[in-house]
Length: 82
Ligand SMILES: [Zn+2]
Image 1 (tube, protein in one colour):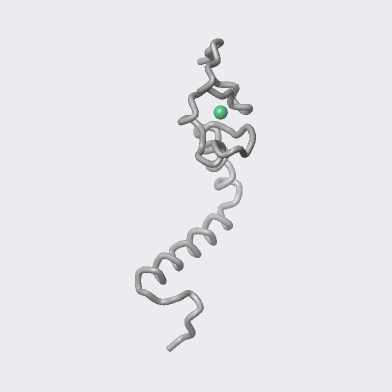
Image 2: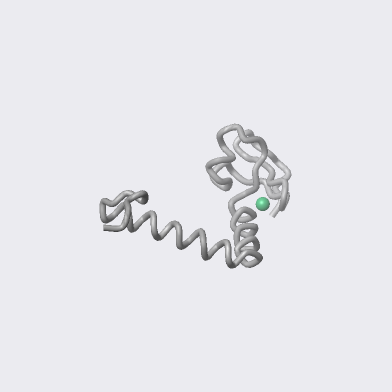
């Protein structure tokens, strides 16, 4: 859906070329990081990266789970075994 009339509130995604309102882009792209991809493209790229790096995803997720568990139980991640 290309919209030829670009308002100041719309940006073109350099990946898919769609004109979208600022809300259509990820938050990071709003704070002067230059032109960023729209959310749909970011999500698509993330899925592709995840599919290409299943081991990294597993490790990242395990680390994330561990951090969250440590936070909830009030234990720091540095804590030695009791
Ligand atoms: Zn896009």
